[in-house]
Structure formats: C-alpha cells, structure tokens
Image (cartoon, rainbow, N blue to C red):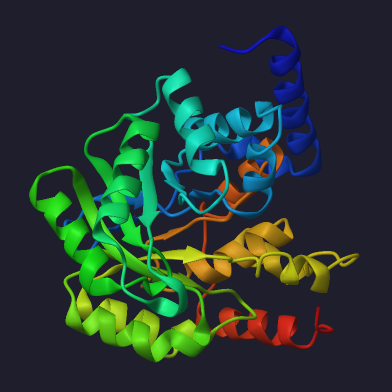
Amino acid sequence: MYTRREWLKLTAAAGTALAIHPRLLQAQDAPMITRAIPSTGEELPIIGLGSSATFSSVARSDDVTALRGVLTTLLDNGGSVFDTAPSYGASEEVAGSIINEIDARDRVFWATKLNVAGRGGGAADPDLAWEQVETSFDRIQKTPIDCIQVHNLGDPPTQLGILDQLKAEGRVRYTGITCTTQRRYDEFAQVMRDYSLDFIGVDYAVDNRLAAETILPLAQDRGIGVMVYAPFGRTRLWNRVSGLDVPEWAAEFGADSWAQFFLKYVAAHPAVTVITPATSRPVNMLDNLMGGRGALPDAATLQRMAEYVDALPSA
C-alpha cells in the first residue's frame, strides 16, 4: 500500500510523462509486442526492467518509493520481465521485498543470476553457489523462479550444472548464461554451442552492434532466447544525443523519444526476446514501454538509424 505522500509522487510523475510524451496516453490500449521463448513457445513482453545502474543506486537508499513505482508501472502497463542479480547491490533484496509487498509474484517474470566464480575466472565453490541460489529464493519467495542465468561466464561446468539440477527439480523454469564483455564473445559462443540453454544475456545497442554479427545469429540457430542488456549503452547513448531532438523521420516507426528510438532498434532484431533497460523513475519506465509498442523499423530504416548515430560525436 502507498502512503498519501508516495501516491502523490507517483501520480505527479505519471502526469509529467503524459505531458511530455502525448503518445503515452495510448499505453493502455496499444498492445505490447511479445516474443516467444524458443525452448517452450511461452510469450514474453519485449520490454522489461533491469536493476543495475540507477535502480541499484536507489535500492541502496533509505527511500525506495520510486522503485515501487517503477515495478508497478512495469506490471500495470504490459510488462512482466524483471532482471536482477545478487551482485547488483541491494537490488534483488529490495525488489523481492516490493514484489511480495504488492503481492505480484505471479505477475512478474523474475530473472536473476548466479556467479560465485573465483578470481580470474577460477572454479566456483559449489557450496557458495548453492548458498547464493537459496538466498535468491528467500528474497523473492517464489518457486519456481522463472529464470536464473550464470553471470558473466562464471565457471559454466559447475554453475550451469547447478542450474540444470534446479531445473530438473522444478525449482527453476529457464536457465542460461550472460556475457557483456566483447573480448569474451568467442568463449561465449562456445558455451552456447556446448550447453543446453534457454536464454543468454548480452549487450546490444544501436552503437554497439557486434553481437549481431555472431552471438544473435547463433542464438537463433541454437533456439536460445535473448535478453538484451545496456540498450542505451548505459549512459553512452544519452551523452551522444544530449541536446538533440529525435529526428522527424523516427515518427515513421512511432518513436517520439530517444528511449523509444534506441529500444525499437534493438527490438527489430528477430533474435531478441526481451530488452531490460534499468531505470529508477516511473516516467522513464512508461517511456521505455512505448518502445515495445507499434511499428518496428525495417532493414533500410535500421541502417539509417545506425548511420545517424554513428555520425554523432563519440561520448
């Protein structure tokens, strides 16, 4: 439940969003694009919510009202996927508390991670890995957890083995592995070939397109779902477009804001199952959700978008 003060904060933020982006008025009516998880056919809304960056910063503060607002905005406007990790500070713990407080366990597709690998990519301690997993279960109080992925290629034999056991026991629905370090993409691709995975998590953005050369096509070939991280290049893309208006031709595919421009570029790749940009503001969550509605750019427009961004000064 919200206090009067919290409710006023959230409604004020929503009002600001509608004033800035009139198309957000359509958010309740326009259907969210969904994509099927290749291993099961289950459909997911293409825009979700991540919990690193600003979400993580706010989770460490004394006032998490905004995070409650972000999560309810996600769930009330067509989204469901929430991606977190034990390494994101207080994000997993705080979000788990909020989800239970608002009784939304059955509405959220909860994705978290596992990584207790030793320094320098050494072998994981299985006991510590199991302890970390059990802590995640305690925080969300949901069984099965929808998805757990091994974080940043941490010791796949040990930790994917643990996740496979959890999946066999019915405690986890989907398993996978993540990598957001391009110099490790060859290693990442080999893991994708060697293991049975439901998901991968990878970085991909309009100015960070390397994953589209090998990782995304391999995911399609292997029938692996893709969670995209850092679709805004964390802060990089925001710095590059600072002070600039979205080009008028972006209206051709329904992008009224830079967030929608960036997200629609990523969503247009057929390998992408869900995109999880992090935010700690309900107004930004609404804007992001609009990036998963309406038309997506075609091949010629994608090239135009990439060329436009490439011509901007580097961040």
